[in-house]
Image (tube, rainbow, N blue to C red; front, top):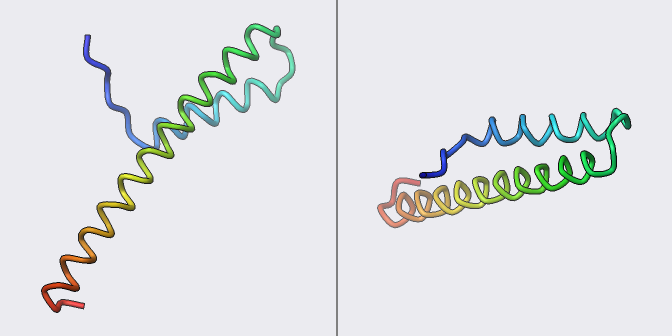
Length: 70
């Protein structure tokens, strides 16, 4: 089954939801660890999306500069 690609905003919302669950302090240790692991996954996904976006911006900026549009 193919993995559904989620947006930056969706990943960030899930990361925030994990953080809020952990802050409530009413989770078991296993639940806290599970939320922490999920939060890390969402953090890495957000980071990857931002890095890819930054690369695209740099490529577009270089293309504009090379064409003398800046």
